[in-house]
Length: 346
Image (cartoon, rainbow, N blue to C red; front, side, top):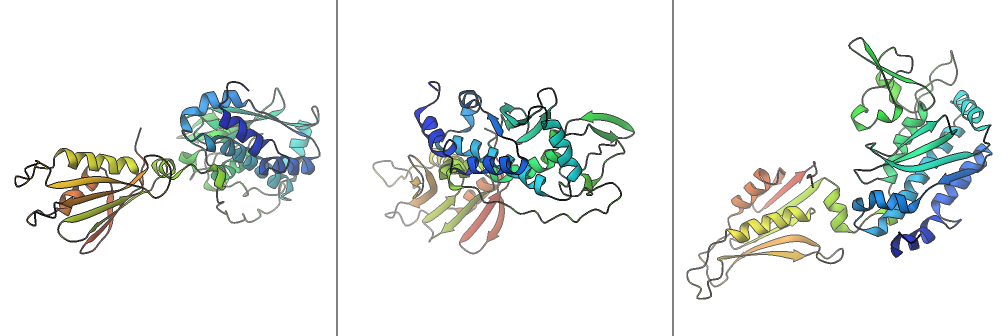
């Protein structure tokens, strides 16, 4: 694979190829359940060419793709082992009987989340990785469960008396509260639950098991400056230690950088200083976590030789709310906390 960076090739060797890796164990478990071999059609060079811009930290690329594939295998294995879906299992086995294998094509698409579809012509699954956003393997499994629920049925949805055909992967986050009826009878909230269908015709609906969140694996997490930059909520904490010192801690480095650059630009000169230094020093402090130029703190301090200079926390708080779009969640005499739940467009 000459097109791939050395780090990617090493990670494929260490995180994907070994038989004792998590993804290979999931593939083996699926093979044992269905009784057919599982063939994964995956072109690493093509995936990297499409997704490189989403992974500035190369060390997270292969573990993330492998983690999504592992989630897909686990979602399908769980459904096949569920006694409430015998007809679905029989239909899958019928569709696999000509090829006698489970073939999965991994590709990049414009879907908003990792999704899976069934290709009738090739009797194979397609695993779609989103092109415009990073992928969380821990969250992918619930989406796969939703896709598998109706993967073999034509989808229709009714709006104001008009019936339109849609694909199952349209059930992204924007469809979380509505269901798609394969019979064309309309929309119902219960239709989207992966485990809400009845076991067989005429039988009662089994209660859905509770959804559980899954912790991501360590290898899929990027370094802190990238993780917190791309993962809201963004948190910010301001503390005042006397009239001449203010400290701003934050999880989102670009927010801190803009704040520091703005107040550095508009800091007045000290008339009593022959060196014409600013009255206030604004400093971005290096983070104790991460690599390189990671910053997580801004310190604003007055010249300790000029007791008349004070730091105005109101200006900082106003900038955080009016310019950065954070909202205040807590305030005391010398401490202010802020939060922003929506990410910034790059």
